[in-house]
Image (cartoon, rainbow, N blue to C red):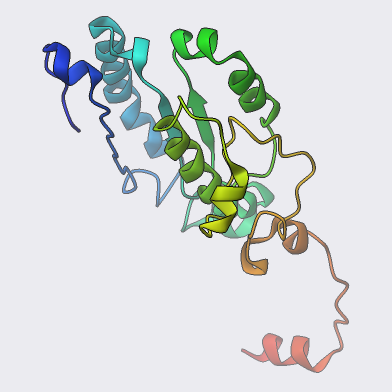
Length: 190
């Protein structure tokens, strides 16, 4: 984590902090509670210092539980493996100055997004003074879109460049299986 000192120069300099907590939740859901107090203290310290007045907070997970009964035997475990959580909180000053961008971000709630979109959205924060140029983005091969500038609508996995391996649309479709098929008989013998 990068700390911000109190000089006026450092307050104007963009700072990016990236933390990765994986060991607590890889083996079970209940261990996430051990981060609660640490994260609460961290966010209170940001609030008390005034840092949240000009800080965008992005929290995301990469996947749910990787091992154990929850993953393999429940529908929820199956979804969590491929559908991570994402939260974006913008400071009040941003919401006042960029009303349209805030509304677009809100309209993109509960829409299919990807890490590529998160990247483009964070990247967009560096260029707030410029209009968003989606043609420029596409011409440079960036597949994600800014969640501040593009309303996603009903996007498919193909639209979002999600490989079929991770496409919940395809994975959640049930396909009838003939229990007398050669494949099923071979699996039973294992």
